[in-house]
Length: 274
Length: 294
Image (cartoon, rainbow over all chains, first blue to last red; front, side):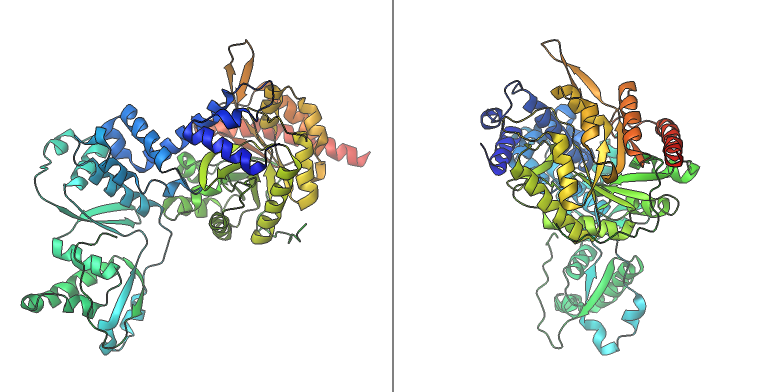
């Protein structure tokens, strides 16, 4: 008599790897083995639907059949590990990047990366924005030691293609906008966040994007400033103040910490993608 | 058996008809404030923040809420996913549900979530695993939960316990309640040649905390027979209404939910189904009252 663990591993092999033998051997005499198909189909269609909901623009770009085929391969290689399908599919952009049949759509993986950031923003936990009075109460000498904790919905990504324009055009069904997209226009520096009305994607100036990345990584204000080339420090301070004020007004941080006094300056990682 | 703290929900679910609340109906429910006694949501759909929780916060001001989990995998031989249990606890803390329920099924093996309510072998080993996990959940959440009978399309060779006895044993050993899904009983009874009335008669009336009703589909098989598939995508059929009447006669009036999860119809259609259940609940209530008076 198989143990419960043996039975569950046999069913997993049937549903995920299409290896029906072990599970079929455990079925009651008058139960045909093709009943396993019902469960396999429910699993595959359910998880494929979850991917389609997280990657609607990729789905529209490649079509139903192609998407289902790519999803089936992806699901076999990276099956869900938790009963929380809203958080499933983080590896799909990387999978698409290496998925030979999709190679002709060079920007597809970048669109998927944007959609994953959007999906994360949609489902991020609710957190109250930083109370600015707490920041204002700091003695002036401590203000430069502040390092911020970003809201969990914030995503910052640099893409090789103007994917926010492609994404908007595809989801809006706007063919004219899509025709106007210039794939050679160079990298896009994007900010994804959830506002009250929904998720917003905006393009940032490259320097403003690098500043946001540094702050969201938890670098102290003084370190971000110190990492600027000396020749730019004159203008950098003023720009940093403007950008920081924008972030604070938009509620992009939920908390802050104070870096140790006289800490050595960190090196800014300008291209990091959280 | 673990000690189970009596839950003290702010708004109990009455022995009336409720509806499964889907995202499509969030705005309509706020707009029309339908005349329905309570609502149930899938716990897993409210584990993030943002819009869904904002709607539920608004809706639960006017309706008692039941949290129905679909992913805890009470029957997993490898143990419960502690992170998922904690996610459920967080949703419950925020939503303050009147009822919480899960399934007699499993969905996780070898670290893979198989995204379905898979059938358990009806064995002493599986019964012990389920009971241990129900104990664990009830002590973690500090409240009683309900467990739902499954709909199944296959049986295992080594199953030794009738499913209805398995259900009754889980309730008796853990102190949990039973969410009696009448449609699931009808579907499984058809698929396996059981008798739905025998099933109902074996369930302890005092443990029944909720009833589910839903539609299902019928698939013709090559040998001329048919398989019934629990897809929650249509009206409750006449035979299931009949079995529901029988359930009410045995259990008395119990909170009853209309589930409709695929091809979700306009809110009015769901409310119409709930009205049908409500009428049967009302007459069951009068019967129970007469029986008490006699």
